[in-house]
Image: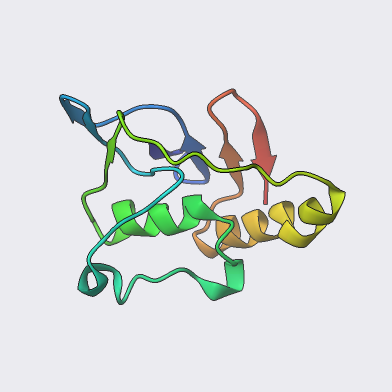
Length: 120
């Protein structure tokens, strides 16, 4: 889930769910795959300036700004190979795009589930 902290200046990404019915949990963000009706997200879209790597920014807009209902089936997963290496890290530019996303929404930092804090 995502929740603003520090008077709305830090976004906190934490593990959790809003409600659960069996193996379906309502949350702010899902990983691996996202399935939606085209007309539902036609205006939301990925922010091309941030690339598709900043999933949190897309789901922040979807759940907190557009008020879409997002759920995850906890008994399903998509198995995929993780791409590692310095070339991929450089291409991804994670810190650059994360900072852009934070600034876009007026946040100065992000707190990950393990407690790590990154700043815009």
